[in-house]
Amino acid sequence: MEKGTQEKNGKLVCVTGASGFLASWLVKLLLLRGYIVKATVRDPNDSRKVSHLVELEGAKERLHLVKADLMEEGSFDSAVEGCEGVFHTASPVSVDVKDPQTELIGPAVKGTLNVLKSCAKSTSLKRVVMTSSMATMLCNGKHKTPEIVVDETWFSDPEFCDEYEHWSGYILSKTLAEEAAWKFVKENNIDMVTINPGTVIGPLLQPTLNTSSDTLAILFNGAKTFPNFSLTWIHVKDTINAHIQAFEIPSASGRYCLVESVKHHSEIVKILSHMYPRLQFPDKCADDKPFMPIFQVSKEKAKTLGIEFIPFEVGLGEIVESLKEKKFVIF
Ligand code: NAP
Image 1 (cartoon, helix red, strand yellow):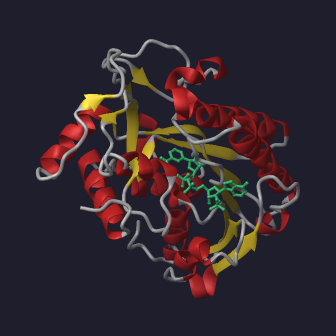
Image 2 (spheres, rainbow, N blue to C red):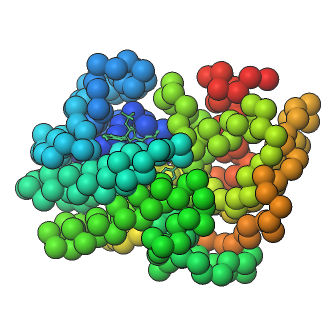
């Protein structure tokens, strides 16, 4: 899709949280496809957040930065106005929070409703594509084994979000945000699709280090142990192509799992040790509990969006090289 620079008749779309890891790629690929993009950022004058966006191919002609904050009611009205599509990606992604309610859950849930309230006022809107997460599917106390296949019928249960310990506030924020979004769009007759990616890997466009990329960077930066996590993984290009296809394909609907593979961190350090044999990676797990089990995630529905599922190892190599180039890992 990256090379397909065919004009989309200059269709106007909005991307919320445009300076982030995923959204920067979304803006880039939308511009390459000929869209006119209204990109929301909290501070359009912050060059660390916007310089990489304004330098994108097509940005001069077709990118408009709009100031908007999830916590301000009505903040997204002007960004959404006139758009046929709204890609809602903005949501805080953090593990080191003191107050999950204020720092994660409030902005995720209230922020999503703020964006959707702006959508409800629009007369031009055709579809909202919301960036949700596999986090909204996996935390429910259901037994997982390598034979179990998770699919779009799975929902997280807020009571089980502590399963992932220090990620729990984030998982809860995404679970409650998606739940609130479905309720709102049903009541207000808005066409919405959610893309539910696993942990996203691939090159970074933005100059800052986002939280999910940091979970890999720390393995290069002196970590003594690896976490007892089995995470779901997907390439950033597959993730963004799924968003765009979910907007462009009229029959797309509901939720889409997006996972290439599920890997325990013990396997990731093994792959990294093969890729970078001269480097030292942590060889001990952070706890002595049994390893969190791996499982499968259905690719069937995502394939209907034309997703190719770039292999994990390709994305891993690309993100490591990108982190190195940006000096987030030094070796
Ligand atoms: P990111 O780089 O941290 O981007 C998050 C974006 O949300 C930033 O642009 C941030 O703006 C914006 N944001 C946060 N609080 C805001 C507020 N109060 N008002 C306006 N904007 C606000 O994270 P990401 O990894 O790209 O994640 C983007 C989306 O994908 C999120 O919804 C996340 O849950 C979802 N997701 C990510 C992954 C992953 O592995 N990365 C996996 C599944 C789902 P500032 O730059 O101003 O802070």
